Length: 156
Ligand SMILES: [Fe+2]
Ligand SMILES: [Fe+2]
Image (cartoon, rainbow, N blue to C red; front, side, top):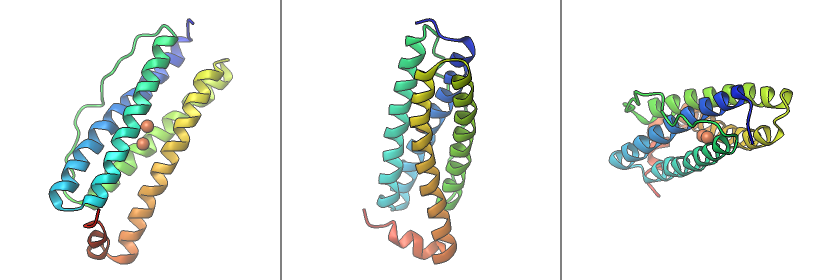
Protein backbone atom coordinates (compact mmCIF):
# COMPACT_ATOMS: atom_id res chain seq x y z
CA UNK A 1 0.00 0.00 0.00
CA UNK A 2 1.40 3.37 -1.01
CA UNK A 3 1.83 5.46 2.15
CA UNK A 4 1.86 9.19 2.74
CA UNK A 5 5.39 10.59 2.26
CA UNK A 6 5.31 12.51 5.54
CA UNK A 7 4.19 9.39 7.44
CA UNK A 8 7.19 7.52 6.01
CA UNK A 9 9.46 10.40 7.02
CA UNK A 10 8.05 10.33 10.57
CA UNK A 11 8.47 6.55 10.75
CA UNK A 12 12.09 6.94 9.63
CA UNK A 13 12.55 9.64 12.28
CA UNK A 14 11.41 7.23 14.97
CA UNK A 15 13.53 4.45 13.47
CA UNK A 16 16.58 6.66 13.94
CA UNK A 17 15.73 7.18 17.62
CA UNK A 18 15.20 3.41 18.04
CA UNK A 19 18.56 2.55 16.49
CA UNK A 20 20.26 5.18 18.63
CA UNK A 21 18.56 3.70 21.72
CA UNK A 22 19.55 0.20 20.70
CA UNK A 23 23.23 1.22 20.59
CA UNK A 24 23.07 3.42 23.67
CA UNK A 25 21.53 0.66 25.83
CA UNK A 26 23.90 -1.96 24.42
CA UNK A 27 26.84 0.19 25.52
CA UNK A 28 25.10 0.86 28.85
CA UNK A 29 24.59 -2.89 29.47
CA UNK A 30 28.28 -3.56 28.85
CA UNK A 31 29.28 -0.67 31.13
CA UNK A 32 27.00 -1.95 33.92
CA UNK A 33 28.54 -5.38 33.54
CA UNK A 34 32.00 -3.87 33.77
CA UNK A 35 31.07 -1.82 36.85
CA UNK A 36 29.64 -4.90 38.56
CA UNK A 37 25.92 -4.07 38.46
CA UNK A 38 24.26 -7.14 36.90
CA UNK A 39 20.76 -6.05 37.90
CA UNK A 40 21.05 -2.84 35.90
CA UNK A 41 22.81 -4.71 33.09
CA UNK A 42 19.80 -7.00 32.76
CA UNK A 43 17.41 -4.05 32.59
CA UNK A 44 19.51 -2.40 29.91
CA UNK A 45 19.61 -5.66 27.95
CA UNK A 46 15.84 -5.85 28.11
CA UNK A 47 15.65 -2.35 26.61
CA UNK A 48 18.08 -3.41 23.86
CA UNK A 49 15.61 -6.18 22.98
CA UNK A 50 12.65 -3.82 23.16
CA UNK A 51 14.22 -1.26 20.81
CA UNK A 52 15.29 -4.04 18.42
CA UNK A 53 11.70 -5.23 18.28
CA UNK A 54 10.38 -1.67 17.83
CA UNK A 55 12.90 -1.00 15.04
CA UNK A 56 11.96 -4.23 13.26
CA UNK A 57 8.27 -3.40 13.35
CA UNK A 58 8.86 0.15 12.11
CA UNK A 59 11.03 -1.16 9.24
CA UNK A 60 8.28 -3.57 8.32
CA UNK A 61 5.70 -0.77 8.30
CA UNK A 62 7.86 1.48 6.11
CA UNK A 63 8.28 -1.34 3.57
CA UNK A 64 4.57 -2.11 3.69
CA UNK A 65 3.89 1.57 2.86
CA UNK A 66 6.32 1.24 -0.06
CA UNK A 67 8.72 3.67 1.56
CA UNK A 68 12.49 3.57 1.70
CA UNK A 69 13.86 2.72 5.15
CA UNK A 70 16.70 4.94 6.33
CA UNK A 71 18.26 2.75 9.04
CA UNK A 72 20.78 5.28 10.35
CA UNK A 73 21.27 6.20 13.99
CA UNK A 74 21.83 9.68 15.34
CA UNK A 75 25.59 9.09 15.42
CA UNK A 76 27.80 9.72 18.42
CA UNK A 77 26.88 7.44 21.30
CA UNK A 78 28.50 8.78 24.47
CA UNK A 79 29.81 6.24 26.96
CA UNK A 80 28.43 7.48 30.27
CA UNK A 81 30.83 8.22 33.11
CA UNK A 82 28.57 6.86 35.85
CA UNK A 83 25.26 5.08 36.35
CA UNK A 84 23.51 8.36 37.13
CA UNK A 85 24.93 9.99 34.00
CA UNK A 86 23.78 6.98 32.00
CA UNK A 87 20.24 7.10 33.38
CA UNK A 88 20.02 10.82 32.61
CA UNK A 89 21.20 10.28 29.03
CA UNK A 90 18.63 7.50 28.62
CA UNK A 91 15.93 9.74 30.07
CA UNK A 92 16.77 12.48 27.54
CA UNK A 93 16.58 10.02 24.65
CA UNK A 94 13.29 8.48 25.78
CA UNK A 95 11.80 11.97 26.18
CA UNK A 96 12.84 12.72 22.60
CA UNK A 97 11.19 9.48 21.48
CA UNK A 98 7.95 10.38 23.27
CA UNK A 99 7.79 13.89 21.77
CA UNK A 100 8.46 12.48 18.31
CA UNK A 101 5.83 9.76 18.72
CA UNK A 102 3.17 12.20 19.92
CA UNK A 103 3.66 14.38 16.84
CA UNK A 104 3.74 11.37 14.51
CA UNK A 105 0.58 9.88 16.06
CA UNK A 106 -1.27 13.19 15.58
CA UNK A 107 -0.16 13.39 11.97
CA UNK A 108 -1.16 9.79 11.19
CA UNK A 109 -4.54 10.27 12.86
CA UNK A 110 -5.31 13.42 10.86
CA UNK A 111 -4.09 11.95 7.55
CA UNK A 112 -6.07 8.73 7.54
CA UNK A 113 -3.32 6.26 8.47
CA UNK A 114 -4.89 4.40 11.39
CA UNK A 115 -2.51 1.44 11.01
CA UNK A 116 0.61 3.56 11.55
CA UNK A 117 -1.13 5.45 14.34
CA UNK A 118 -1.99 2.22 16.19
CA UNK A 119 1.55 0.90 15.81
CA UNK A 120 3.06 4.14 17.12
CA UNK A 121 0.57 4.26 20.01
CA UNK A 122 1.74 0.82 21.16
CA UNK A 123 5.32 2.06 21.09
CA UNK A 124 4.38 5.22 22.95
CA UNK A 125 3.05 3.10 25.82
CA UNK A 126 6.35 1.17 25.93
CA UNK A 127 8.37 4.40 25.92
CA UNK A 128 6.20 5.82 28.71
CA UNK A 129 6.94 2.71 30.79
CA UNK A 130 10.62 3.14 30.00
CA UNK A 131 10.50 6.79 31.11
CA UNK A 132 8.62 5.80 34.26
CA UNK A 133 11.33 3.27 35.15
CA UNK A 134 14.08 5.84 34.55
CA UNK A 135 12.33 8.45 36.69
CA UNK A 136 11.93 5.93 39.50
CA UNK A 137 15.65 5.03 39.38
CA UNK A 138 16.67 8.69 39.49
CA UNK A 139 14.29 9.33 42.39
CA UNK A 140 15.68 6.32 44.27
CA UNK A 141 19.22 7.62 43.78
CA UNK A 142 18.01 10.92 45.25
CA UNK A 143 16.27 9.38 48.25
CA UNK A 144 18.59 6.45 49.08
CA UNK A 145 21.86 8.04 48.04
CA UNK A 146 23.82 6.71 45.09
CA UNK A 147 25.92 4.24 47.17
CA UNK A 148 22.86 2.50 48.60
CA UNK A 149 21.16 2.44 45.23
CA UNK A 150 24.19 0.91 43.54
CA UNK A 151 24.58 -1.71 46.25
CA UNK A 152 21.15 -3.03 45.27
CA UNK A 153 22.28 -3.28 41.65
CA UNK A 154 25.09 -5.70 42.49
CA UNK A 155 22.67 -8.63 42.73
CA UNK A 156 21.26 -9.97 39.50
FE1 LIG B 1 11.35 2.22 21.23
FE1 LIG C 1 12.58 2.80 24.90
